[in-house]
Image 1 (cartoon, rainbow, N blue to C red):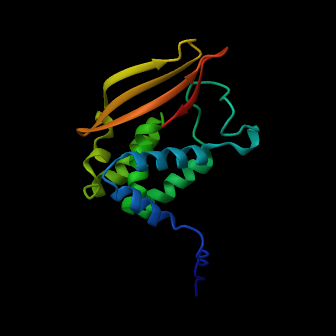
Image 2: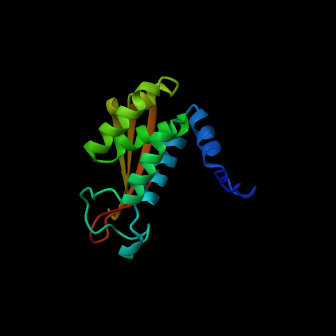
Image 3: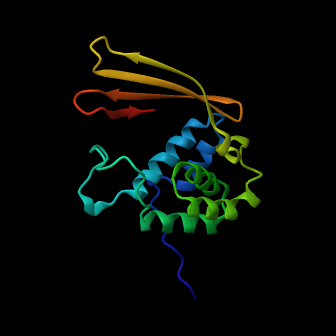
Length: 171
């Protein structure tokens, strides 16, 4: 008889329950934040010595980690609306055409229960932008408003311009 997976300790949050809560939120922001955080964490190469706070060695897209690809494969097989939502965001977020096609092939037929903005991430478009710069010019915050299926979402991006400009924060 196959053994049952161990029950998680009661003090640990249930991933699907947390994803279900953010998926039910009328704003897309909590789910986008969760997908971004999880996608980054699953793609960190623990052997390269970097930390989430260090600058990346290059700006261009890097290959997705084997750990991340394993996670996406497991999520595609699970067919839960919560994981399908993450997969659709990752398909739009990561620059990997093969992964994008695999995700859409697995998820599109069962995505009708998901919010419209998730099913139309390819049509996200900027609506407005503004910049606030410190009078000394060393810091700048960019505000970009996007339209997600008619829902406005604003992103604030803090850039520090001391030496080499780098992304300080984004929310």
